[in-house]
Image (cartoon, rainbow, N blue to C red; front, side, top):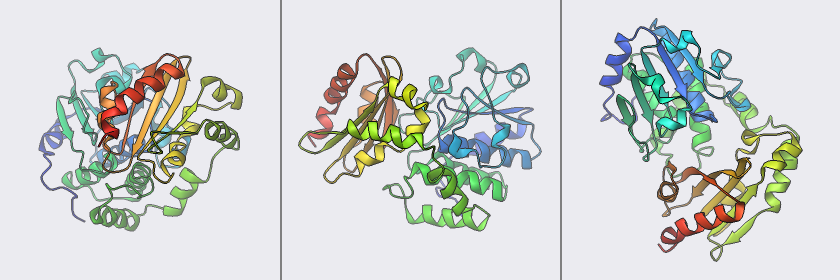
Length: 328
């Protein structure tokens, strides 16, 4: 095993972890497999070191991650007193303090370690390790474990594999290098179950998801002379199908897969007139820049933001932000 990037400064993280009495690992709101996989991998490593560790998020882990070892130990909701007394907090895959869904006062007097691969990260931590070269935050944790001198076990390997598999769109993005594949081989050698991951993440969807998908595909609109593809889901359709936002993860890939499309846009209404916008891009477009203009963030090929108003208003805002990118 060798690290992906040897020039990353992990020493401040190592020092903080060694001195910590209790460590709280936290993921971002509406967690995905990268943030949950990263959270779990850090948890397993720190427990192997004999540290006192807790995992608590604002929101529940998505169902595609519920096969991962120790995921049942992640609590969610308001932060209880037993967790609030932690002296070190490790935030994984969260681009801003607001993405953690916790009142900022919670972090006062604590060492906040911010580990993330989004270039738009706001550097909100006491210690910040931000590097957009990594294909996923889970890949950063792969390197961190080596600096902690913690061997990969099957549980950590499974968690990191889920993180990398999903954040690279099943190894289809330009961020996937030969070194990423070598890392993946290490994960499999350490016990990551590829078939179980595929079954849990891609082949365990609720039947109602496909009813929701029909509504999403009905909304498909191709614009800008075929260079952008748009899909949307209104809040009442989630209510009608009995589903929620996590059930539409991956829908944007249908828009991205269309020949000639450089930028895919998925707009879903989380609650009335509040829209979560996801972008996916093909080179040379950089949707991280687009999302940044709209108050969000991300990286070149995947980014997002939240906008408010009617669907028509939101679409116009996005199209305005896309103008410069589409002139490349």
